[in-house]
Length: 347
Image (tube, rainbow, N blue to C red; front, side):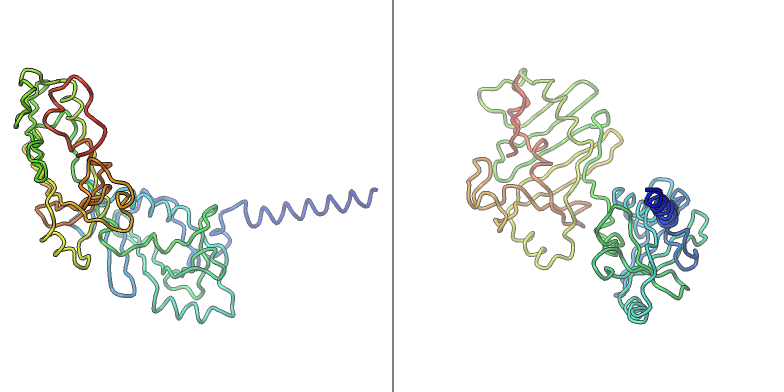
């Protein structure tokens, strides 16, 4: 009995020692920082991130007084920047690549890896490393510090996937997707002109707590019946409106827009005189269109029920937008002159 207790005690001590060695501290403390310094604990000091892939596509992300900027010209998508900074903070060396695959791993990194350079706000280097593919077994990502002799398998504790897709060199992955960002208090006017149903078009004006909505009113509605309640609600729909993604460079997109059916134009102006214009086009039916099986009374049968194309930023950018996001903006003029809430469905 005493021997059994002694054995259990020894096993507990050994187990505790192993746990302390491998888990009580971050694994980057177990290895030399030059070889495995992938973790950046103080991400608040990061001022610039440069990413380059093996095809010479590059991304430069700078911290400025007005926020993060991509390639010195586009506002950055905040969720992508937060994810990347979080990756720097959480990623840690799990173990060195085994000796029998070091040569092949280095060869692959030299030809297919993405290089990442991280600088502080003063321009000094924080870290430079190479990001490869998935480690054998699919757990972790092969990475190598610049100047190191050995690649490491790097992971984020509790995350089972690979990390290389977080270091994208596609500019459209990093660009902010905002179309309208006008709080209700700063909204001056909105014009929505429909091409499929022009009778539903309207011009909306806001002056403090006073509203004016003009257009071709239905015969049964009087101008004096404007609902300030509905107008007030509508003025809050432009505070945060985003596109789903950019389509610039997509094969055949120019032709699709040039020959496409126009849905509407929207013009928004704020009290500071800033104007935003967006041109919207119907998206044709595709394999995932819900109305291929079930007709939608609010959408013509030839078009997709969920998504539309749009031209923004002076028609320089082609994007995809969602009916779900824009349904609050797609209103009919008559809805502003009723004392009931506007319908939930888009046009």
